[in-house]
Image 1 (cartoon, rainbow, N blue to C red):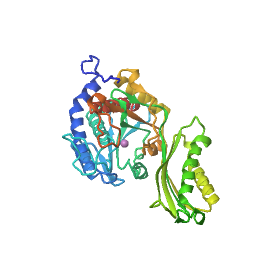
Image 2: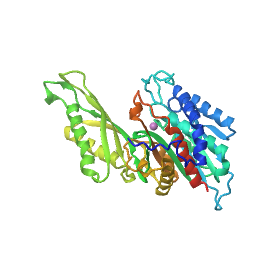
Image 3: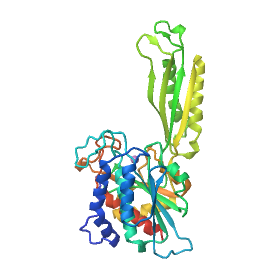
Length: 408
Ligand code: NI
């Protein structure tokens, strides 16, 4: 495991680092308070109240109730801008939890049965509060404006889009946006940042094959939807294997397939649910079309009917090269070693940060948060998920250095 956490013994600690290090105990407290009260997407009422209470106590202006539970805090810098344009940087944090029953036996365990911050969004809120607090205390360190966007419902149905539609990127117009995800696929001491595609498009489909049921011993009187579904499932894999450029990554997964009730009855229908993932925006619309061609072709060759529903859920997360380079530079300063800042961090997971990145240049990055020695390395969405809280201050410091670099 890479262990490159800057240590307090290091004599080269900058002023900013010392200020943010002093916040670490509060960052942990906030994270644990939020962790105990997890809420699902668009229901983050306690979380939003927690955030607005803090903002108020620090004298930071904000607008709440955007897209139901979203909040935008606005912090103005007092440093004179170096150009005619006063820069506006947005920092985005998601704040929703998951329908997971927590299995960790910790003092800050979820108090809401069946709900858990199993993805680390509690940490995202804590880091966002930390940077808000830091910037409000030190407005002389930056020019222009920083908007902190607390977004609901990242896990679905998606809070980014309604927040954009509500105008959070306007008035003042946001020039760039950054955001992070605490990431247990990377160890503590690492930051994953890269230009271009970071996370995949998320699309999903439902298909019902309508056959003709009958006796399992008299198949000639039936149209067997199970046989047809089996052909569809295998043929769908030919899209990735034979239609997509092998140098482009994509996934088609059928995650649910249901038909029939017993051994000697051929059922009337079979239903499948699936997901599609890819990085390159040029494939938008392609999978929908190709899936239906295959389903239609196989069904018609057997004389079966079908229903097909397809949803382009989240677009791919595409980082702007210049902002990604800015974040990389900030991360290099904080991690103090190039080996701690890695571009090998792409994932087929999805994120609705992508909607923000479609509107303004920006960068989403991963802050390594797993610590195997402390057994804090369960995967995201697992009932035992937890992360190494020492990274909270690291996240705040990376944001602070991004603000310094961008808001000049
Ligand atoms: Ni998440």
